[in-house]
Length: 398
Image: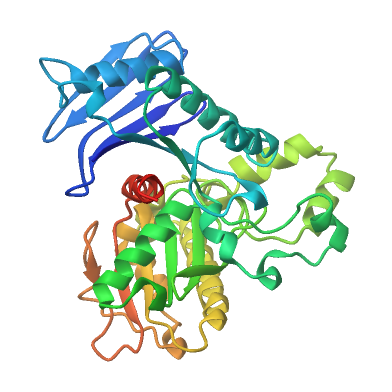
């Protein structure tokens, strides 16, 4: 079975073609600046790649260009588009009604539209990607895999906030959690590495890229997470603030004269690593700055590690019957030796002991815990696209 995975943004579109027999990506592509005069198409199949500057006026053009590239006589990987058995679409927000991957039907489309206000930058763009792909591939199943669905197993005491109950019951304000396909993939792979059944694995997974979320997984299910109603809280991220006292919002509105849109711009685009350091939103620049004596870069690194430690320790209270592993993934988690070291320092009291020599790796699957560590520490590169393809295949096969 060959599954095409689509991840559609407002001005970009990523795709991968995955051979499910071997669970291998055989082609991938990225469209940037869709709708602009100079769009860019990056295409890679097996070990060859090319970048083309061409006019991509809309998502329909991007998808048709992708299908032409996949079936091109000169550079393609397929003889015909009929070799594609299904399409898996990454979707962000399914609200409370979605708790698993779903075949895209008019009812699911309506749920996505209803939840557009919860993910205004993502749901409309992703829905547009589905609609345009469906026009070009109308005769095969299209499956939506939602970021929020993996966290639908959280108990009410983990997702309901300390606000008047009607804010939840009447308006749906609650903790949702995100990066679901990444955490799901990492939990499955962790179970395989440890030789355990998926429904037996207890771990904390740390997805750390430009966006950050940490999740407690008990018996293979998400039971708590650092992210919440939106994608700003938890650990300070590239440009997002992470946790802070909501009274600060009230103060800024009342005394600094900022309105809601201005505050949103501050906490989502001007805060986090960039706001603290004044240097960059990229952790590589932060670490380099800290090691060169830049005090604000050191402060940003320390705040990031300190907050991550707090969330890991707090989330561990969900795993009182035993924690199998702490797992790092995504750009920072997979590649930053210094960040993993800083986070693990001070977590020995919950059985997390890092081996500095084993930790000296980047971008490869590895165990980095000390031999006597009660909790395994793992680095596992994430593969959200493969997880989307796996969930798509499971839905199709019933």
